[in-house]
Amino acid sequence: MAGVTLILDEATPLLERVRSAAAARGLALVGARAGAQLVRDHLFGLNAQRHRFGRNYYAQAARSVHSRAVPQGAAISITQTGFRQRLQGGIIRAKPGKALTIPEADEAHGRRAGEFSDLHLAKYVNPRTGELQAALVRNLSTPISIRRRTLKDGTIKTTISAGAQRGGEIMYWLVKEVDQKPDPTVLPHEEHLAARVTDAIRTRMLRLTHRSSGTTPPPAE
Image (cartoon, rainbow, N blue to C red):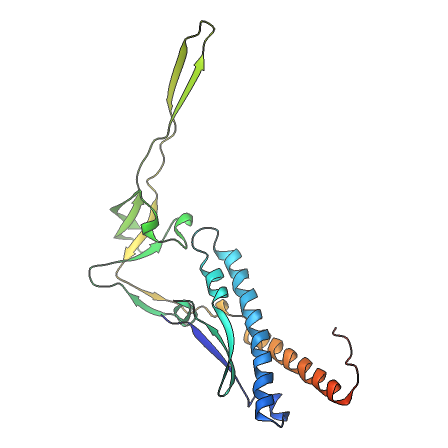
């Protein structure tokens, strides 16, 4: 699934005051770069909130953000695979003969099932649906500790003890398809993004005006 692209075109009210189309495109690119940085900061923040484990998806998305000039003006693009799906939602279907893995345990979030080597297939009643459902479950295991110590007579005593049994928790539920809800929070609020872009363009226009008149622009607040 492709990422998303946000277009900042030359019809933006602030840019309509610019006489040269080339200058308007240049200013649009300035705004797009400022907006791109806001998007990166937002995604890195989401990563800190939502990814205590796993592949740090939103940090990857932040690193995929870039701005560029386009015929209409400038664009902010997020090329991370699956980002459009998270933003807009929709149905995701497993490939024939396969299943989608829905994380259940905290440790499973942001990680593929293949990253675990101790899972087995089982069926349990899903408390959310009340129905019997296939799941990937962590194997039961018992940690063993071995302690050796030397006695006063020089002999070595070995003590073997078993810890508490662990495992058995459901790591993933298996489904054929899922209807993912849209999540507009993966992007900054539209008003915040527009304000950041507008401020950047206005600041650059002010600097250019003072430069052409030979005056010194006021310091940034």
